[in-house]
Image (cartoon, rainbow, N blue to C red):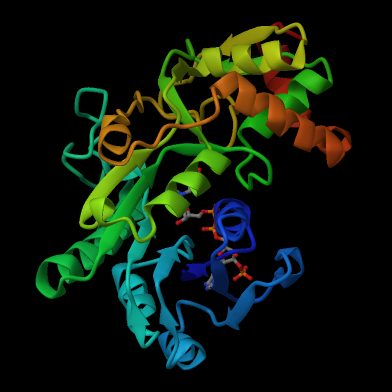
Length: 319
Ligand SMILES: NC(=O)c1ccc[n+]([C@@H]2O[C@H](COP(=O)([O-])OP(=O)(O)OC[C@H]3O[C@@H](n4cnc5c(N)ncnc54)[C@H](OP(=O)(O)O)[C@@H]3O)[C@@H](O)[C@H]2O)c1
């Protein structure tokens, strides 16, 4: 297959480039060309800012793709998603990387693909729902084969979100870990290679046409449980310092986007039963590989200002 990926040079989309090449596909990417040195040899590149629809149409004019994967949030509106679908001359199957944050998180867990979508997560949810609806409408009205993928927190090598690396940083330095409140909200993490492999397997698969899938790991852990798994993987002692969140105040720092006050748990039954796709990684195994990448890159030596965190620890009598 000839597959176009919007993105291709960072985290999820770069892993997808690798997975598709491994499976013998011809890969093309469209992005602004800021990090083209990261692309493996043999990848065809188109340069355009996806929010500039005229430039996008010009860059992709006359091109035909067996698959297109929209894996870039720019932030990407429904109009941007439609412009990408319209830019090439032909697309045989379109995959949209949405998010599990489209679900109404006030609903009972676990969330399945029929859980109502709403704007619990604000503009991000609004834009992702609009993007999903563009694909679903093209499927219903014009028979375009489409698939929607809804990942949760994605982790793994090259992660641009400071989540697992946030805790690696503290434990590698023997620092305590602050926890907002009890730290009991449930989270679900999916390994980036499992996500990339799932999307590679979906491309061109008729069973996936017109369908939306949660794609993530099969374990749920509390916020504290996530840090405990990381401490086990690092073989480091763990000191947790619980910090109550003052009413109307800011929660203690806890990863880049893991502090929020609700559970986020999803079932992956649909992708398993309909497509036979299961993740390869347990959370512990995936974090162990991510730690290897973190150490290999020397990220444990990066400069971090712990001043505000130390002040909070002191105010809690923990420093
Ligand atoms: N990370 C998570 O935990 C998570 C969870 C759920 C869903 N998602 C979704 O997964 C997708 C991928 O996320 P990500 O964090 O791996 O990457 P991302 O930051 O959404 O995308 C980075 C890639 O997109 C390109 N890009 C950025 N802005 C662009 C623009 N205006 N026009 C054209 N290309 C542009 C970048 O190259 P240039 O800079 O060279 O343009 C780079 O190749 C997103 O849709 C995101 O919403 C992520």
